[in-house]
Image 1 (cartoon, one colour):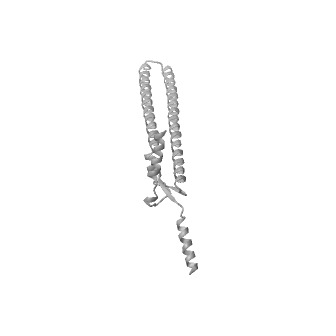
Image 2 (image 1 turned 60 degrees about the vertical axis):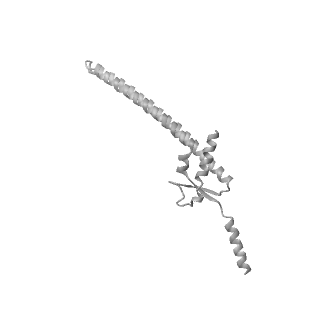
Image 3 (image 1 turned 45 degrees about the horizontal axis):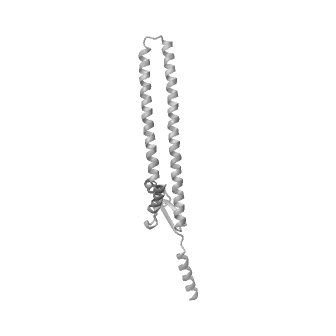
Length: 169
């Protein structure tokens, strides 16, 4: 009888010391994070401005090509070919410059997004430490939690902490 009481006491104590485990829905967390929204909006504005610039340059280049076409109609063939060769080189140079500018915009956007992801991870770690969690898993699309009790979903709490920190900055 004493063995049963000892075993029962041990099981009760063991169950009381369960590790705290929670999960966050990464997609919901990132979509709701104000800094991420700001980074997305900034990147969108830069992309749209670049697209307008690229379109403007392209239209100007097409106009220049049409003007060259008209002006070379009475020219000797070798002179016309030379003029079109120069225009083609100019077009290639402009294309390379535009490509480099676009890559720069993408790199800057990626660096800012990497910074946001780092902040999210640090905040999740801080939240977990402050609230005694042993593990915080990733839920949502592409996450490692296939099922989780809603009581274990701390997405809203972490999102609130993230947005509070962002508004203080």
